[in-house]
Amino acid sequence: MPIINRFSDLLPEITAWRHDFHRHPETLYDVHRTAARVAELLGSFGVDEVVTGIGQTGVVGIIHGRTKGSGRVIGLRADMDALPITETTGKPYASTVPGKMHACGHDGHSAMLLGAARYLSETRAFDGTVAVIFQPAEEGGAGGKAMLDDGLMERFGIERIFGLHNLPDLPLGTFAVRPGAFMASADLIEIVVDGVGGHAAWPHTTVDPILVGSTIVNAVQSVVSRSVDPLKAAVVSITQFHAGDTDNVIPQQARLAGTVRTLDPQVRDHVEARLKELVPATAAAYGATATLRYERNYPVVINDTDETAFAAEVAAAIAGPERVGTEAAPMMGAEDFSFMLEARPGAFLFVGNGPGAALHNPGYDFNDEVIPYGCSYWVKLVETALPAQAAA
Ligand code: NI
Image 1 (cartoon, rainbow, N blue to C red):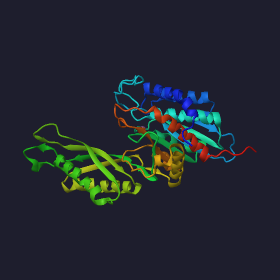
Image 2 (image 1 turned 180 degrees about the vertical axis):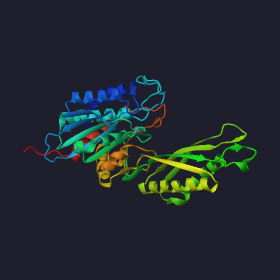
Image 3 (image 1 turned 120 degrees about the horizontal axis):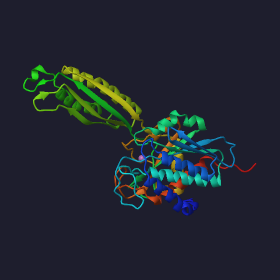
Image 4 (image 1 turned 90 degrees about the horizontal axis):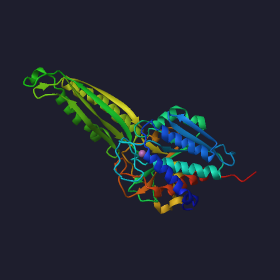
């Protein structure tokens, strides 16, 4: 079964919702307009329940099938937030908000899930319940975690969870996924090196935090090259180094910051532990002190093996088996759908956006031709996961 025909009819309407979101981008948790529009549309479709304010500005719509005998509940998740980027697409529906734009296609993700919600509300050809989830603050604000902390899974009895993201340069009409680790964890590190400042001509009377910091920059690279299995991925990048104000003074302090990415929770634990040993010990060897703050942000996106196989089969039914990559290469980018996948088994897939600017680029735009694929995927997923029962 290819694209569901009904989505050809609904395409202009769904596209109009997408363009409206695109014109009015909102960032992080400040997605009040978008969330209100999502809730209004869900209500207009006649879904059974619309709940707002989960994870601050998240919205959940509940749709019951024609029968509920199985008692099964699945969750479908989209994200609503935009990015602090100035748009350069020149599109007629370009951002009207200076310095903000939908540069990751979350406008399209929300519109596609709304389209699916409309269809499912009309047809209800399934047994059980679907929760359509619209989350805020995917871009660095852990909005998915905020919804979980508000009891998302328990409150609606969600047993399985699925996410879908567009990907530029993946051909239109194709899907990509892999079981296991798919996207990286992303953690923040901050290092403060305290030395003894003094005259640059008398270095022997100082403890130079710039030299110590430089040694630390080199030393932390040994964690990836010597402490992590070469067949496993890890990145430690020091991206900030601040010290000193003039040419004849050795400063008192240096501040460094950076990011750690891994594709394996054990590697993540190991890198964190090694950095915590190495940073103070390196400083101590030079008579300085250094503190490391390691802040865990997004965990690894880990796709459940069975749910991934299931989602790939559904995608194959929509796009054709030859157009679904099931061994896509893992990516070092991060996604906060990882929190939901820690809470429930599920799968995160990419759908091809076709050629064009990369995600987070000011020239990026979601491709409206993706809409029928995304909507059909969601509907087929529900109707396959929760097959309709014959009338009693
Ligand atoms: Ni995104």
